[in-house]
Length: 281
Length: 232
Image (cartoon, rainbow over all chains, first blue to last red; front, side, top):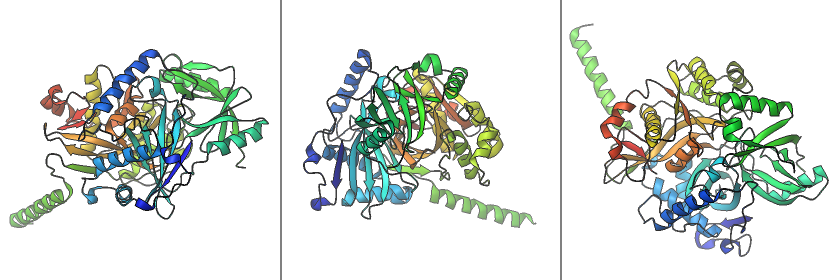
């Protein structure tokens, strides 16, 4: 789901009517490996701690578990200003000062999308949920200056400053159309995903996952396409990739079969077949 | 040169050093925040498995040495399959960045003391103006720690690190992680922590850690260095 918001201040322009207050996330997480009940209960304890945090604590959020783009942006703004707002300007880097100034003056355009979390932390770290909120931040001239990721709790994970070489985000639906064209069938349920492995889908530069012909296809931000076949070959982080020797051996074995591996969550990894670059059109 | 001249030059150098220190150091009070950036030159990785080579290159450039093709470093480090091997990155840092005392620093997340000591070495290195190559995402990625922000905690009078600056060679330079997220990112949620550090740059971590002890880590936990800890 793509949510857009124009700032500045009272001149806020909503590009997609109604979306600012519309729910950001679908009811069901889109992933291929569920977490254990134990992981879910640990998340609940962390959630309680966040909801009870008081103003003044770094854990405090105006909107724990934000439900729409407005709340995500409010959480982000609060955390950036709380962390960097009291630091002397000369101590900050240019990207930080531009970001803080823009947030305070409401001169930035911030777009919020969701990224499904297939990283290893999803089922092993109670602070890491089923998805992230990815914020793309552009200045008044339309230049992208930064991207940021928030956990689904609303807690700030990271902000990265654009160096000018990063590819723009392509809407998942557009990527799904290219997949359908390449593989000759409809591609459904496209979402952004973040993973790690010999295929890494960075949360700030996510891949797009889509279902087609019983397979799941992942398209990287460099437009390379990988297939998780219906008959998945699962790997264990601990047993198959846990030491340098095991990892080297497994990655070489996969490479010989024109395959790579990526995480699905927790200990679970999967083998993916490489299909080369996808057409840009 | 006469003794008088030597003394005069010595005094002048001392004043210059004091002025330089006063200009660059930060004295902050309770509740105040500050930031340190080592200004490591950023380089984006040229291939998917060049993050180790790009990290070594950044450290090399920070040390004032010349630009080199990433594939040269990558190949020297062993090429495919070895680009992320910590020992290869350490050797690369030694050979290409002149860090002859670079070591692979491994720790377990559990027990928690091991984790705290690991992050104490990390903070101590940044205190010494020396970058750290952090191996993250359960060993599938690497980048360079370039500094961070901290706040002087009013109750403990400790410098609590709020953010860690990470030069991620994948793209989006100067990433800023909230420190709790950074610690989680570094461990990947699993029981392994690895970084490439300069042994001399982390020399004081143990005495600092011993001096402040676990009692100085508040109930929210976190790694700590000299008067410092990561906020959790």
